Length: 196
Image (cartoon, rainbow, N blue to C red; front, side):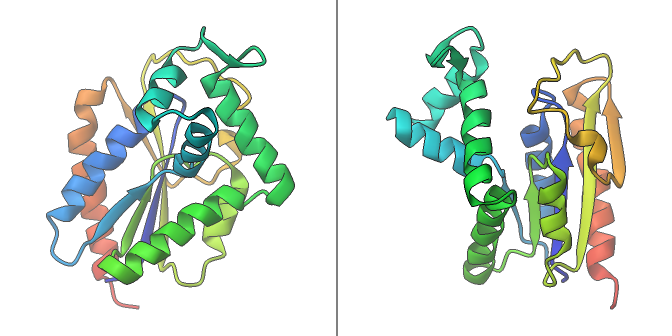
């Protein structure tokens, strides 16, 4: 089967990781599909948790509490965004996506994964990096949205209009994710089985 990358974009709190896990579950039912989910922000969270000396669970808890300040009047979410941007300024705009891609390549060698589901594509340079990888046979980019979902579009959420989106998923509530995940898994299965 071909190497396929599925990226999921959407505003904070919409359920990108939940949806990615639903797609992964559906793909695991397909013979020859070996999916793995990776968040570009996973390594950011890991590094920041180490800096603060806390578990990832505690970091996620603090991230949800936007009124709790963890450093110089920043919430944990604001600190994560600031830390990630600082690293990108020092090491290059594709620093975090490279880390995610390297993680996938390592897992692919060990466990024969052939489908990467990225739970949190946000920036054009991340998409550009994936587009430049010659060992990817196909990329499919989804924007996930819940109707009437109110979101504060802060500076970490304003790059989406610059992304190339192949498929928009708009649902009333997260309960509808399973059916949409089945549709996406079927589509990826068909792509993976195509010749050439």
